[in-house]
Image 1 (cartoon, rainbow, N blue to C red):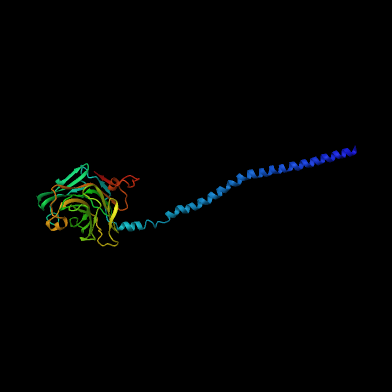
Image 2 (image 1 turned 135 degrees about the vertical axis):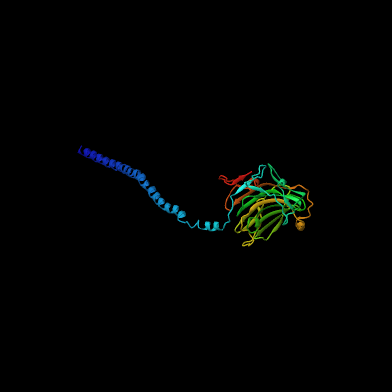
Amino acid sequence: MDIFIMSMLVAVCSFGILTLNVVKPHADIEISVAQIDPAAPEAAVPAPIDQIEPKQTPSAPIVETPAATPTRPVPVPTKRAALIPSSPGFISLLGDAQNDAFFYRSDFANPDGHYGGDWSPKNIKQTAEGADLEVHHEQSRSGPFTGAEIKTVNTYGYGRYEVVMRPSKGSGLVSSFFTYTGSYEGTAHDEIDIEFLGLDTSRIHFNYFRKGKTGASATFDLPFDASEADHLYAFEWSPEGITWYVDGKPYYKTVEGDAFVPRTAGSIIFNNWAGKPFITGWTGKPTFESGAAAHYSCISFAPLGDNTRACSDLYLPNRPKHDGLVTAQLTR
């Protein structure tokens, strides 16, 4: 009996030991999980804060870097100091309501020079499609012809000049778009030209003058007859030189350091005329039909560095559209 009791006691003690051994690991697991779970979020919270704070401190120098470089504006005044005075940009569609405060219809004789007749305002016909400038076989104070000319009241300097036009066709005629200033304005003769001879309207002529002396003029064959349809012609004038364009493509550029690039702001002029006999070797004999007209449907100017509305916005379908408001002067 004593042996039986002793055996039972040993069994109970052994069970208790086994139970403690089983429970104790579970308790350890619970404790370890309790230590990991709350500690993980607590450790994760300060980590991003510590990371954000250093990011904020270097952000101050990043903001200050552009502000701390006022050297950028320094070249700008230097360049602008070399710029010549200019009126603001504009675009004109030359419709049937002519803006007389903006354009001047030439009305005077040309006894001297190469023009073979007077400028006559009655030779300017305006419609919703633009302006037709006619040349007539009729006696005038200056010769056997009358021509037509329109010029801006204001003067313009460096920038992009654009025109949409159809030159007149016929031997003896000249259709032009150009800038000009000279003795009449009390300045040196500076000029930039786009010209067509009615003798051959499949060719275009570029020319420029500085103090009355011509630069390296150029003539190009066009892949079309310019008198048959409107096309966009332009030139960009800067202190570095001049580049001429046809339908948005560059055709001709002055060389670097060209001394004949104009330096004086001028009026924008477009005209249609026949010359005096001494230039018929260039223009051809005046066998054109009386009333032959050059058509102009858009004139525009954008000052250098400005992106004001231009004729190419209307003529070229792929030109990027402007994001901002147009602030240029707008005439009909």
